[in-house]
Length: 148
Image (tube, rainbow, N blue to C red):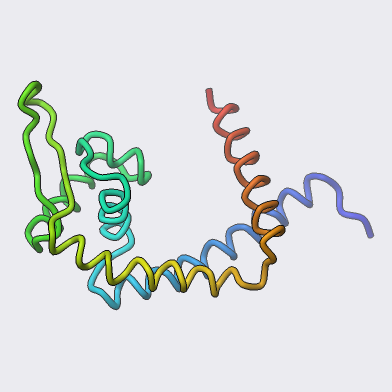
């Protein structure tokens, strides 16, 4: 029996949700092995790859509510993984940067994380990965456009 468009959309949602769940669980276990939760890893990874960021922008870049951001930043700062700097030209802006200890931690975690993801996605060929990326971007962008 052929599925209709609505049934296919529901099935796609379930398949995407399940895939996201198992991949996230595997990645999150690695972060936990290093004493981090997924949000802490996301903040450190952003700073590691993109450099200094205003606190006010970090939440939107990693999809976290701004109220939670201060809590996460405080925890990471207490552990010595990042540092805050007040903007000299606009005292309302606070920048966050990864510290040397934070960089060392990510130097250790990130290659393992990257290899781990490569292994998890290994069932897909490079062409299938490229197609998946293209289709999921198309889907995400179209949904963003609908919400405007």
